[in-house]
Image 1 (cartoon, rainbow, N blue to C red):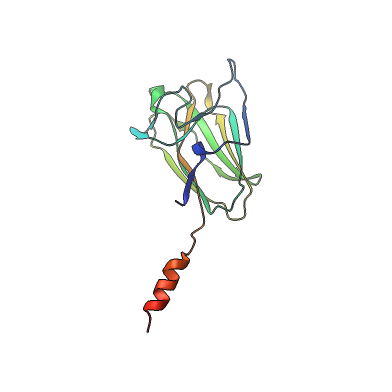
Image 2: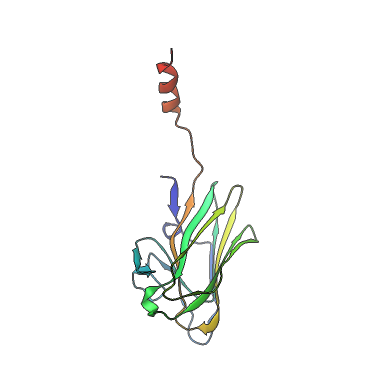
Length: 161
């Protein structure tokens, strides 16, 4: 298919800056605490679970058209947590969210990746330190360019008079 989920890829770099306690790892298809991804009352099978403050980097080894995801604080926080989500493409900031809090509806993001070779996803503390900052990148995926199927082209040509 055209969609490649980030949780199915290995990141090239991951860093977590602990606020007070131990560092948190990133999670594929799970929230930062290891539970199922759920935000805005909806469950998601695919995505990344990060905990502020963190940066995860993917080097894009093939051409992609777009990065798409829904961003939110996981419902496991019971309404706690506050974080800012940022996306950098080739070192340039392309998205900077408002402060997202628990119980808010996830925010969709769709960014152009044509010609890009690097994607950085960043979660920063907001106004409550890092407490309960279960930052979900829901259905985070790379979209491959549309390709024309040669077989279809041949079939279409043959059917014309």
